[in-house]
Length: 255
Image 1 (cartoon, helix red, strand yellow):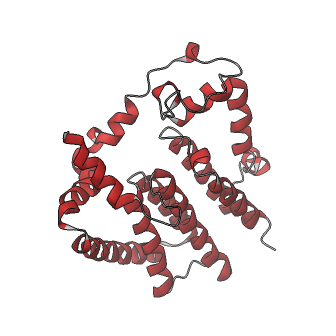
Image 2 (cartoon, one colour):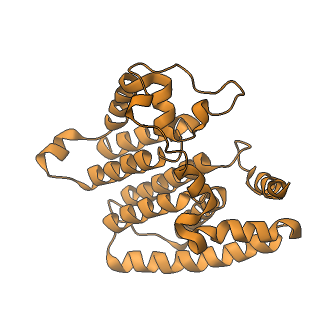
């Protein structure tokens, strides 16, 4: 079948990492780790984002590994850059971006040169498809096509089902918001959203005096909400919830 080669290529190239599996959830966790490292540098230097070459290289390597894991990591890179811009000045941002682009291009060329010949075309096409095809990218279109349910298809308490009868996605959808709704219904979804929003410092938000820390948390919550349209991100990578809570503790209890 025509799809067999693509599937084999995907599994051979993306079954990597300490978990043994690499997909959108791995890219999500890696970008959270990149943001954690960025914050560590910021507070280590007394709220001054002064990167040395080694720290810049570490950040670029983390970002590269996230890109190789999942193309959805580009959203994480956008969140990362918005946080970076908030913590630094124009000169620091421009310097890091130029260095990052140079290193990423060099590292990607190096990675491609080591990819087995039978997978090289697949890897290059997979990596560049998002920029070439835009919204017509295969995985994005597949995700969009899953948005087929409306308000009346869900119940108050859900069906308590996470997987289908054939161990596939329940109701044949991978959309995270749908999966939560089918599983625990509107009541459970509200509780889950409240859990996510609990990491926000509401006093600052309501007072309209948003600090750097609250800005970062708001961006991370937005990252989670958007990624949930892709899949059940905090369930597929449950450890990321602990990372988010750890970030909040580090931001608002720095002592």
